[in-house]
Length: 276
Image (cartoon, rainbow, N blue to C red):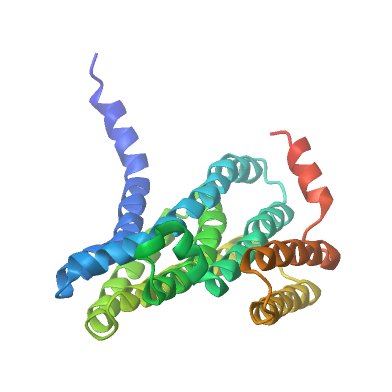
């Protein structure tokens, strides 16, 4: 039997999620359409943007796996009214600390990475697009953690409004910057939109769930970011082969994360032993 009441209930409960997904796709992909239509050589410029975006898209799939894991975890914790702060903190560190290393590698060794991927098609301009675009990975990571937390809690109205606002801001910045900066204007629009949305979700999550961040933890994060950036600056101009530099920097920065306590072996043990 066709039960229209059942279909109505399902659609009523699910349409906010559908709207959110639709808006997120729009404000993350609409810059491609605008690049193609607003520039005289739009097809060529769009090709450059797509070449640079491919790496970001690939690494974002790893971050997306966190969201698929976290949604049922957060939903269960909220349903059982258990503390959330430690779980959020653990997963944020596990995603964003290696994510920062990835972003710094992509930024400081952008030309080398593009040369390996595209050989004769690579250029300093393509490397510049890729290097700045990869910074967006950190915003994606925050969205996949704090946006997932708000989704699990049912804060769909807030998420939809932020996504709609992100779409409007993205379009406006693209309209202003693409004629002036070309593809880099679209990159700036992506960076501004993604970080604005992610920071709003970060703020809302801390407000709703009282996720306090201690001054000591903030200091550790500041020191880690400063040391990580400085290590890449120094190594970049050390004269060492770039692939050796990347390996050394990755080992150093992840080891330093354990040394500062931002990463902990107990994190991994807790995740392995976690039972719903």
